[in-house]
Length: 169
Length: 194
Image (tube, rainbow over the protein chains, first blue to last red):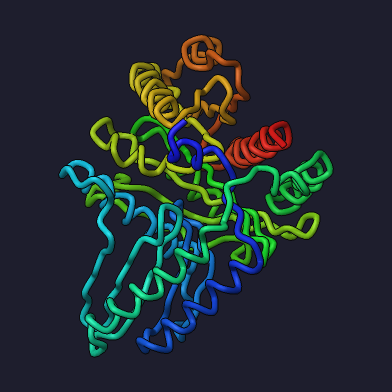
């Protein structure tokens, strides 16, 4: 099975140490660039963490839109004969700019910054952060065994009860 | 599936698939209306000017903690029209469970079958098959005139005998049962794998 298929069929597990490391690195990136917000998400659209000053950001929705945006351009890269996906996307607004980069195969980084922040600076610091994140994430694993600990019959029964309660059955 | 051990979150991706205008978006709209705001994200829709799904719809359902874990379900629809096949492949990436929403109108049987075969082709490319993947089938629009019988739809579409539902999505008939069953099927599959 090729790596893409293998990763599609297994859980991606992020440990507490890696999560804390990610948070620290994106906090540094946010401080270095003066970004309004930095969002880190998984490439299938799961939000991981966010730092910054934007209040009330719908993190699940932003992560989903960014991941699918990135996947769509990866498909275009493939159609255009690029061997790997485009490394970043840049969207320029009247007040806010958005810089989206892939971090390896599994993750995406979003830097949201005001238009008076220099793009070159954002690119330089983001590249440094991506290199540091890539090193940190080497130990993030695709292991079903990690899920085994709590995904059992008891979990399924409790989930069923919670669904009945939440969905008002 | 994505597990964040620091936040004790476990996230799953459920995709609503089916031909154009079968009611996939209507399913998500009903679920979104029915859930308490604290349990869901915004409903994101990416539509054409004609209000048809251009890329996908998205919402997240978040449940209370179970055995210390917070389960989250990212619900997506795909655009049903034949020419959006690349968009559908992108949305399927990382999928954990599928709801196939079929249009019960007799005149739409061809589109239902084409869409189901398109889904199976895409799953095979990803290394899966409907034979073993967690999925359910929803026969929607049961309130319309000139609908196909359930027996015929079962024979034509449900060739692997998965759970099926007779739905009227705008008023919520069987919408939540469909959702609950696919979530349960996803967990059952993982429990068996584990």
